[in-house]
Structure formats: C-alpha cells, structure tokens
Image (cartoon, rainbow, N blue to C red; front, top):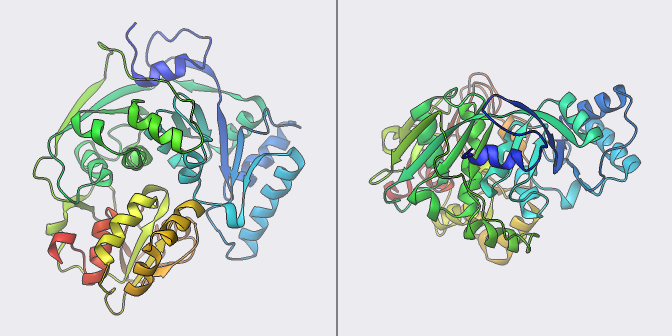
Length: 420
C-alpha cells in the first residue's frame, strides 16, 4: 500500500505489517529521552518494574535542562537522582552544567537523533525531531521507563493530516508564524493523535531550523508527531551536526491516503501573535498594537537556535530595550551561545540592555529566570501561553517569532519589526 511518512518510518522499525491507521505495532527504538523533571519519575518506575539495566547505554539520553542551573533544593535533588542513575548505568549521553542545553535543540545538534529514527521522550515537545524526519513523540514516564529497559514500545499508527503551505514568504515571516497559522486554522485539538505531514513550495525551501520549530509545536495542535520529508536540506543539516553519512531520501509515497488536507497560502501574510490563553488565538501582529509588555523572552526549544538569535540581533542592533522592561535572551545550547559570542551577537544583546542567560528552559515553564508577577504581560518565542504558564495566574503570555519579540522589546509594546 502507498504509505504516509509516519507509516513509512514506523514500518522500518517494526516486524508487523502496517495495513491501516489505528493499528498498534511494536517498534524498535532509536533513542529514549528524559529530563530533570521527568527523569526521576521514569527512574523510579524503571526500578519498580524490576529492571536492572538500560537496553543500550548509548541510546538513553538524560538532559538536565528545565532548571539549569538548579534554582532550589528540590530541583537540585531531582538532578541528583538522574546523575546517580546515569553513573550507575554508564549512560553515555548525560548532560548537566556547562555541556547541557535545551534538550530538543541539543539532541539534533549533536547528531543523537536523525532521519528515520523512532524516538520517545518524557517531554511533550519531543515531536521537534520530526523536523529532520524522525518519528518522535512524548510519552509518560512509565512508558519511558519501559523504553529504557526494553528498547521497544507500542505505538498506535496515527492517521495523517497533510499540510501544504504555498505562496511567497514575507521578509519577517518564519516557521513559527506558519505553525501558528496552522493552529489557528485547525485548533488546539485539530490534530489530536494525528501525524501532521508538511509539504508545499514554502516548506520545500524552509531552512531545517524553521522545520524544527514547526515540528516542535505539533503538540500544540494535539498532534502525535509533526513530520517533514528528508531532502537535501535535511542531509546537509545532518552532515553539519554529527551525521555525515545520511543518504536517505525519505518522503511519503504518491497516492498515500490522508485523513484531511489543509492548504495555506502565505502570500501577503504578516507575522502573527498567539494571544492569551491558547496557541490558537492567533492575530496579525498589527492587530496587537498598543499592548504594553513588561517582559520579553527570546529562547526555548522552539526558537532558541542560532538563526533565531540572528533574527533578534538584526532587530536589536543599534537599538535599546524600552525602560521598565526586561528582555531575557537564552541561547538554547552551548554551541549556539558560543556562535553568538564569536559573531558579535552577545555584544548586540548586551548593548541593547538585554539579560543574557544560560542554556535553560527557565521561564518557558514558569521555572525560573523570568517569572511573571500579577498582571504582567510578556511576549515570548516559547510554545505555550496557557494561564499561569510563565508565573502568576493573573499574567498574560503572547507568542511570536524572535524578530517580533525583539521589536516589542524596543517598542515596549507588541509590534513587528516593520512597525518600529
């Protein structure tokens, strides 16, 4: 049968013949991920089920990124549990401190995840890796424990929604905007347990870092995975990030059956903003003028890569962050941080009056390094704007691409770069 991208990847990892969506298949895993919040839960379950050894010490990834550096005793103890487990098991890919970055940027950057892989992670944004053609999805810590022990898991083959994006991209339009436009179109549950398969002329030209941003937010539409074909851009990215031997050309078969097809034309589309308190409450940035903000966050697993930093720096160069506003810049990995330093971006950020911090999830989940107080409003390049996500239940979070966030930091209110 003609297969979708999701079916094709899963078929390569199971001995079961995939005949239809909804079928449950047993899949061999390429990697299993947990972090400093979910790792201890998975480790407890691992021991509770009587497991004594992980299936492959090179394919279990523990990344201490949510509270890096640890903000209090509880978060320090969380890391201690994971560190001891990593030492006991001889886990190769344990990351803490100076070599740690935000997990969903770090793993593709190091070549630990690649095209055609099947990866599960105890974090909902594990779907990020679909940007390079991996079937990657979040699961609960108990499922992660079983994956660490067995190297296998059960997966229900998801039905697929095909998303075709065409037209002409505006100067400041980015992958973040494309994904927010899709979520506006189908809603936060529009892809519930579905695979989102992206294509079209705009997607064909979209840089891999933009694809990773879009795949990252598949979960915000309820998706199981967000998938992009493996093409020359993918292979070039992999060659530059620890996987020089990727020759795979992976795409859906012609004639594959889709549950739904969504077509989006972005010609003439300006950047957008997701307003509180849902990623689907999307408006054009020009519709959000005269909304003052007290905080801007540029970073996270959605938009903390070097291209994102470049977009922000381009807007901030020669300008100043507005008074009575804090602009927090968090490059998502040490490699991104060092590249920003080498190419002068750090000086731009500091001269503009930004707070430049470590490679951490931090404020995205209301963890630390940028918590909102009562009544405060933020615009952020993160992925969620639920009530209380970044601090007080009485605060508000707006989501945007990095250029819009940087422009808003300068204006002191939500605006796009062209509106400065």
